Length: 91
Image (cartoon, rainbow, N blue to C red; front, side, top):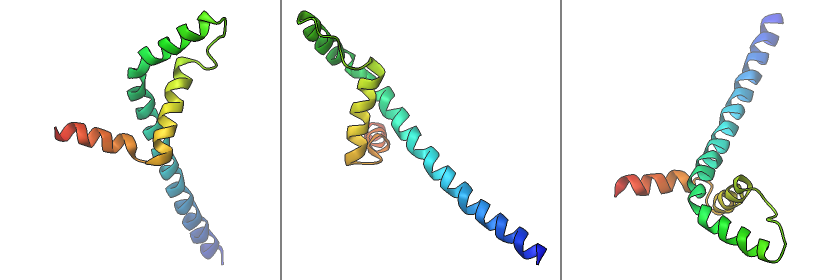
């Protein structure tokens, strides 16, 4: 009986570790997206300057701005940045 319980626990841990590996892939896609979207600094600064001219502060940091853009892309296509990289590599 004890051997059965140990094997069952190992099986559950194996399933659990697989889920951990799956979840760690998603932040990597997001992290890549945030890096790539940082090319939109000029857009952030344009909006920030425009808002400042009306004495309104930007509602998010640069990093949050990039993250919002990345999440919007990933919501539509979960592997957007992987595809983008592949497309750019194929050029």
